[in-house]
Length: 585
Image (cartoon, rainbow, N blue to C red):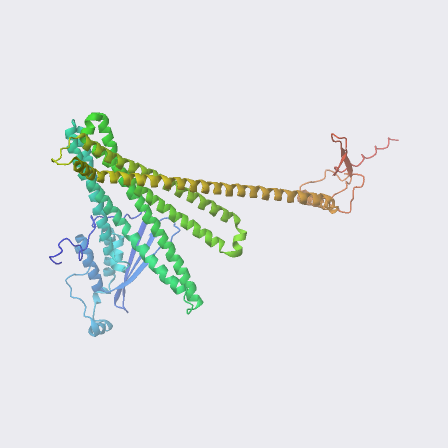
């Protein structure tokens, strides 16, 4: 690193805390089995690791395999020993043995069987299996598999992300500032006089400034990625829209450009929403910070008395009230921007639905729902704007009170002027000195009048929007009632037509007979006759049977004594009983 930038982090690698502590937890019942064998064709060790569990599982057992020469295994052992030196004596090969020759000469020796003869031994393979099993218990699964099977870069588990490191440093700075503020509040609680409390107020102002700076650093760090994404999305959307509007390109390329533009536009919209949400969180934090200061001063005013407090700290209380109104105005501005983004999103969905052509005719409920959502969002925006105008009015009134108080203090004090020869010259000097204060007061009054006019206009717009939304909802309710009545009327008409149809009785009778036939076929096997002398009864299963005398008409008398004929089917008449047996002769 150069001496000109001693605090730069370029070229450095940040390591995590406790990188050599075991973080893996091997589940109970899981097993990793290593199988090592010497491959005489490739002159390398064939290493296989299979994962299995004692209980059945839905996931598949994953196995790993690799071919490694003795020199590669020595390098693996050396890397593992750097992390865990306890493995130095457990490696089956001699670590001081020279490496096998490489190149053409080494290949020729291996083909002739003159190299690595000691590897073709079952004892060496068993020793390697025990070594890998012990290394798995000592080093852990992730490190061993990364080094042996080249699954992923194992150094990523030990390196620290530089952005996360910086963010944690900023958060620690904010925590230190908040702890200092807590210490100052403890001093305030122990203060017994207003003179001591004035000293505490000076310390509190410095600490609150540090807290505000730390808060700004934290939220600026979080805002960075979203601002970059929004800028990139804006540029890419613009380029893709130009590409989609180029008529010299083919239809497929232009369609892909339109799809990409929509995707980038949605990403930019999501980034804008995230940015506005972070703005809201930041301004809420600042409003909470300033309101805490103001509430503590009001508590001190009640504790030490109004007259004593006004002599020492009334001006500071007025400034805090002004700061509170300013921060609250910023918060309301962020809330308004967020709701305007939401309104634009809903309006875009409504435009897309309306531009879909014939599809919009078949989805009136979705269109009505989107229109209601647009109206409600617009009303919420008017509420936020009115609240912001009300807060601006409070701010201007407080500033006007500060000016009036300063002017009153100047007029109460005795002012001595130089000697003049003419009284008119003295009056001109007095008017010139007071013109600055009068101009500030007049400007504040003009701003207040503008706020009043804007608030009246916004109230009228809000009333008109609310009335329009209410009218739309009432029309939708009336339309729904008309549709329900139409459906009910259609059902009644269909029922009347069915009753007037002469074939309706025949169809209903046929359905009844069909149900009876199915019931008899279902239960005929379960019913057994008691004797063979059981008289035969007419069966409804036979359609040729027509009960002529069994169909009856029922006449119902109403209140007006007008008979209403109802066609009903009476149950079948029972057959007459058998004749009595003849007397015995």
